[in-house]
Image 1 (cartoon, rainbow, N blue to C red):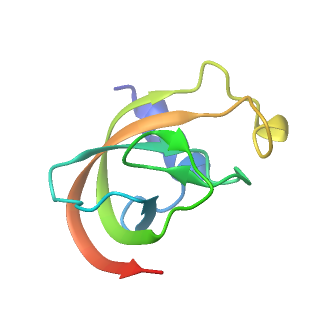
Image 2: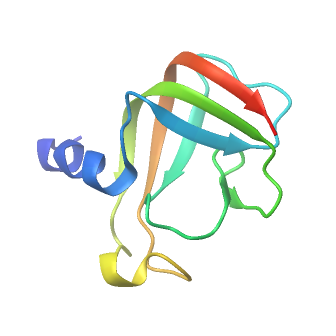
Length: 101
């Protein structure tokens, strides 16, 4: 992965050392690979399934290690409510907190 991708990731995806994953998954483990979407997206996104979802009821605060990023369709001014998103794959390094809504 290029250094520019890593530097830009903090701005695009948020704090990877204290990231809030959202999901409906029954189980989330250290070592799992998750999908991230740019932090200004206004739609709920299930980080475990990698799909948009309206009913995520589990929040996992964790430390992540970035694996890969895809900025190919990313347009910051249009990426909040309907397209032009940035995506990334990351591995869960440490789970800090887990809350069921």
